[in-house]
Image (cartoon, rainbow, N blue to C red; front, side, top):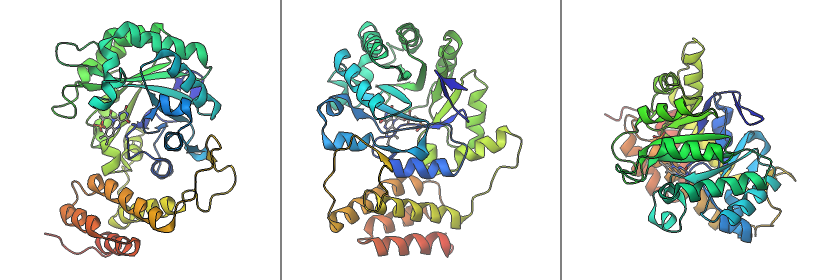
Length: 345
Ligand SMILES: Cc1cc2nc3c(=O)[nH]c(=O)nc-3n(C[C@H](O)[C@H](O)[C@H](O)COP(=O)(O)O)c2cc1C
């Protein structure tokens, strides 16, 4: 399938997740197969335009991740258009607009899901962006703001008319946040009435669900929390769809994923060849060893809180990861749990 001229090898993608889908994580998931598209965490349009270091870091990516979509948030058409130009200048394949974030800090600035409350304005943001760049502009929205305003079908048509190249719908309202369940009937309704590709998002925790959702007429499925729990879910969905036996992931492989993630994070900006990272060339100050280590520990804790869900003995592992105070302790904890598993019953 294609988004504009960008060919996706698989219809399954990693959903953007703030704090989680950093470049190291995206690379690792891609290496495990089945993944047609990765998206960055949401990046502030304001920060991109003003060149704020921290923001620029969120937008960085590596060649291995292509095709890559950089997701931006904001509510001002001119600023969003300028931010899209920055994204295009970084060589990204796609720029995606966040119209789904329910967090008040974002929504009150006329960005994220609050854009769904002003469809004309939302469409004008997309129109300004599509005029400003050649790369495809896509939109990720929710079902609507609340149960009285489930306007995804109408807004999706409007952003299509404004030039969007694809739309993703997470079938919950902002009011629901992550409670209840995603409404895939609504996702199917949007897919039915648009001629651009429509992706669905929400509640795919098993590879079977990913494959089943494709039968609803969507062109692709974005998986978020399911990937944080099981980074092989897209590869397993691809196995199923191709009629192959679904790959079985051993405990050792699961442990190795965490150790590999840790290694990639440790090497971030430290021993990277010239040009490895697509960035805006702003030389970030090298982190001190202690602060870099602390950052890696916090990153593993963040992933650990998802990764351990549903595992036998997962809550023990979560506690152990959260109390490991050094990288060595963290490695030992992970190795002891996954590589030399004992019964946690
Ligand atoms: C920790 C976390 C962070 C998220 N951050 C973003 C984000 O930055 N941009 C966005 O469009 N959606 C974000 N989402 C929503 C997901 O992309 C996805 O649409 C939602 O979680 C439903 O899919 P799932 O059930 O497969 O997780 C986030 C979700 C989670 C759990």
